[in-house]
Length: 376
Ligand code: AMP
Image (tube, rainbow, N blue to C red; front, top):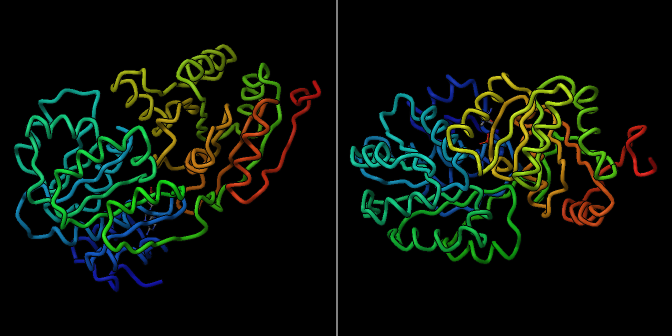
């Protein structure tokens, strides 16, 4: 593996990397950084937790050093939490380089964001809806835009976001550099993605849509009405230590699981789109800082969040798409540590689990817990 210095990154960036204690580039970084420095469009596909954010941020910062303060880079991501996390990462890597980043996301007031944009920033880290609002109000212009990054690219290009992305990209210069990163890229989305790229180089580390190899998977067959009792039992036994992230399909489901766990004497927080932005941030901060050990979330927490030390991810409901499964379980086993992914499967979810196994290209072992399996 080359060193970061051998990749050609400038001294302020090497100091920041040093300060973070990164010994060497990860495979996606070693492959993507030289291409991005050369100005190539890149589609980067790598497993979750393998350092994708630095893979695009470091070469972008290198290129911005010493330039005029204009909005030269936009990094789009699907959730407010991910947007804030990217902003935080950019700040870490940009320490000592004098570059400015502004986070632009919904659920909070416009004034502070408008002021930040008016003051001049080099990099905007944004969710699409709020960025559109600022564009329409002309708080931001893209005349000098050089690089567009779509993080969690397949999600950004699916039905929910595609029209907004189209509108935003339509205001950007055609000569820009475009970088797409994701752990998953279904073939039908890749066709759409390629419309935004010019002669892209595909950088792929590992098999596409594969689960991080640092995660152990198991499926517990369990009758639906017994799921919460099994979850509580797991939280007292296998998953008794360390932070646990639980995914439910619905917002009401997340609230219900939290209530039932608390009744069982296990403190937990819920995080979903019906909570206010302050509550969402507080729930995540409490979880990150260890004030609450169990976070029950919907798919807003499934992509990109980098929370160190999550020992278990539990799919309380089986996710509908194999891609969702890959992203959810990718919240554990990050940066080469190991983690466990537990899926609670009731009878009508058996078919969905089989589909996920087919896409993953691996069978997930079934385990049962006495008193909780289908036979009881
Ligand atoms: P990401 O996939 O971008 O969310 O990054 C996953 C985690 O890996 C983050 O906590 C990063 O701080 C960490 N990381 C990124 N690059 C490196 C590296 N070269 N060496 C060690 N850790 C890294």
